Image (cartoon, rainbow, N blue to C red; front, side, top):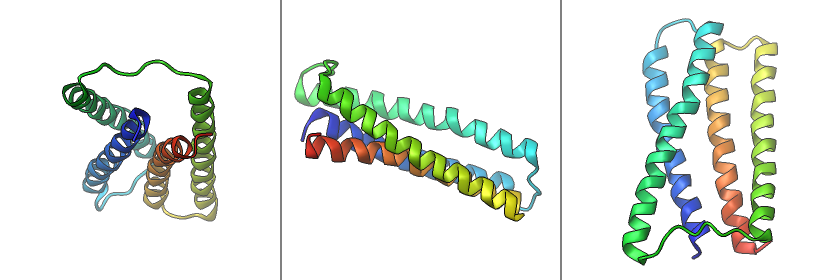
Length: 144
């Protein structure tokens, strides 16, 4: 297994951990209240730093364990294949994020409650974050 695959697996697990923690926070905060547009924006904007902090912590732990286990530094060299894989994975992420965004907008249009739209939006961001990591794993395995 290559360094990039291991890193993607670890970041995938970090996404899952961050999503679970954030959903517990979100459910406990929104239990029994009406969510308006201001709260909707607040919770979506809090999602980005929360996931970023979890990813930074996971990356630090992974780099520390990788250095102690393999006794070598982070592989920062990228060739054309790495850039192609990064672009293809980013494309898949954009498709997943846009699909979840349009599903959320469709739910708004259909008149579904704001809390349901919030859960769908947060879940869609989580799915899009996992799509990019799974795309990295897939493309590094296939080699294209």
